[in-house]
Length: 259
Length: 246
Image 1 (tube, rainbow over the protein chains, first blue to last red):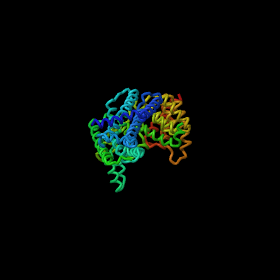
Image 2: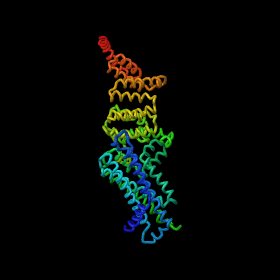
Image 3: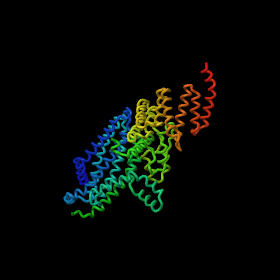
Image 4: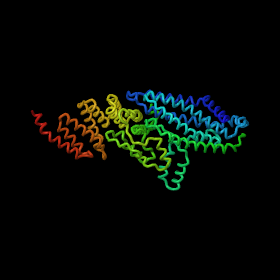
């Protein structure tokens, strides 16, 4: 476990040394504050449009951070040849995969915590309400969803030759699932065989990341999600994380690293 | 600036933001583009028909029963109740309407819908008038905007004289633009003439009120009801004539 944590620690340090997070956070804050300063019919209690835009920016930023940070982990180690001294130590390839995953996931947690703190302050200053538990649920579910994304990208990074290829494919896959995943069943119903069966199979195979997008609950002040549902969604995500990490390990353990 | 950035796609975005106002009005409970209900909802959005009674809060609605366990469980994480914004919360639709009007200044509905909610529910009569006048500057021949401005003068400013002038201008524009069409906008004519009739009735000009109601009756979906009103006013006509002769 110490070896995994040591590898994860390096990944976290890398996040705060690189400029990606700072740039995205400043951009999110600037756009939100700029839109917050717009006067709509002399009413300073209008808040939902601001919450909506801020949360959208948080989602985009978090996805960019998670995917780009993860995609360069193993290829960068190979390119810099640091993978060899790393594997020369008593560290297994499974520990490298787990350490990289944990590092990226924890690094994203730090970024998300900063983003949500900003969101909470902006939202609270407008609405004069602090539904902390609801924000925590949203953060937790988004972080859980990002675990699946990180595991998927890590799997991609041992399959695809270049990080750019991996980033592009994973972005499209994740956006596709987020936007269309929940509607595949509806689309399947309007198709003829064998397209219907194929779409339905895909619908049951893909991780339903759209569940974890609870922005509407936050924006429109719907009641909190039952904790049991949050737990079940977390377990659902955990299954996919294990599957993707296992697949990544299966490929990585037989991979010839010499260039 | 917006014209430079978006070009002709502004109208598409303007429509998107107008729909956003309706989504906001339903607190996020809205059909997706994959649901059959989406087109019907867009064509007949509730935010544009504020006088209609709210549907009872019901679960399911356009979603229908869940098709599988993924669908069923997924519904725990999104709005599944049909509700409408109430009271001061109505203000939350205003930014989307403003942006929609900024992107497409010829989108009349954005001005009229925003004005209605501001003057009726938020007490923002000055802001509503200013927004309508912005709309009129961009669309000087719009009878819908003039009709809404007349409503503002009549309901909120209690200025029957100005309301009459504005509604008459709206009626003239309607006749100029719509009377020759195969499918004229009868709904607007019905609204303008019924409001004019009501105003004239309140002002004691009963013969003119009858005249407007007769016009409305020709296009109204409920002509019998209007005929009843005409008969009631006609019964009062001789008495009013007698009173005025004294």
